[in-house]
Image 1 (cartoon, helix red, strand yellow):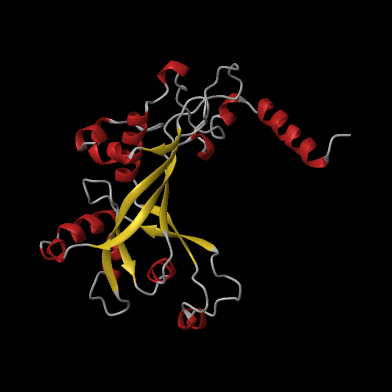
Image 2 (cartoon, helix red, strand yellow; image 1 turned 45 degrees about the vertical axis):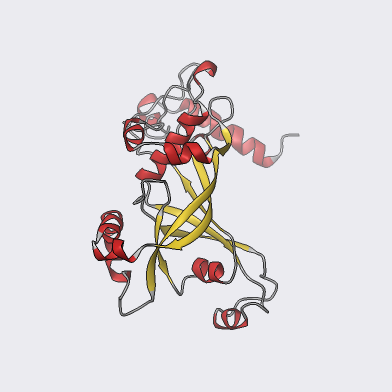
Amino acid sequence: MISSWLFAALLSVATALTIPDNAQQHLIPAASPAPAEDTMPTVYESTIMARRILSQSSEGTLVTVFPSETESDDLSTTENRPKGMAGSPIGLMEYFADCDSTGNPTILAIGIATPFRNYVAGSNISLSVRWWPSQTHIYSATEDENVPTPHTPAALPRFSLHGYLEDVDFRDYRNYRVPACFLAKHPDSVLWQPGNDVHTSKYVRLVVEHVYWFGGFGDRARIGWLPMEDWRRVTKGEIDRMRLPGEK
């Protein structure tokens, strides 16, 4: 007997295939031809793709872990943190901007925010970033079996940066280079700039020590750790010339 959830899934597929073409086009996500096996991106090309995603993105998930209660009793009290959370990871959206030519993203660290409190208390830290392009074209579900992989989150590249935080040099504040770069990506962050009347804040960089790359489905994209020497030597010209899946 077919289970109810499987029956519902099959019914939804059958329904989609019977929708008129002019209605389907609004339901099917965009796609670009999947590369042939011999055109799978090289490790270095994958690294350039990751650096371009970093340059084009402005939000990611900052992941830390909660410290033990004995290490931060004051924090667990002020946060009203439940018992037993020590060592538990938490991922929260944070703004960043690619203001460093070496691939170290710049972050406006708000002192009261959980990720930065956890980091100060001894947590490791990582930043997860994914690529999601604007949809510019579509295909019909009635096309033949050679329809390429659609632009779904599972098929598109993402990566995780692992490293440590370091304060941005004060000279970069004084000449306004870092604030100008960050504000261009996040105009609303003017309310939280260092010296604001609400929260203590400062600019930091995530100094990248390791990069885990997930380029998409394994038959057409690479998955694994990227060489740091490649991450550092990618040039701005290479980043500018690279085009990501779904990007014009």
